[in-house]
Image (cartoon, rainbow, N blue to C red):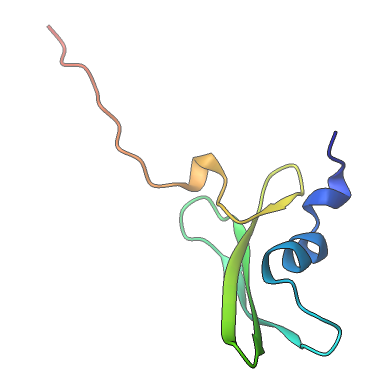
Length: 83
C-alpha cells in the first residue's frame, strides 16, 4: 500500500529523474494551469548524458503526479441530441 510520502514531489523527482548527490536539480517553472487551476512544477536536471526535465502536477489530495488531474485534462464531450 502506498503512503502519501510515495507521492511527494521529492520522492517523484528522485524516482523519475534519478539525480545523484553530485547532480543538481532545479525547479525551472512553477505556476497553475489555466483550466482548473491545478498547480504544476517543471523540474530539470543535467549530467554528462544530457539534460532531462519533467512536469509534475499537484492533485486535490495533495499528492504530486507526472500527469494532471483528470478534471484538468482536455477532453471531448458528446452531447446527445434532443428529440
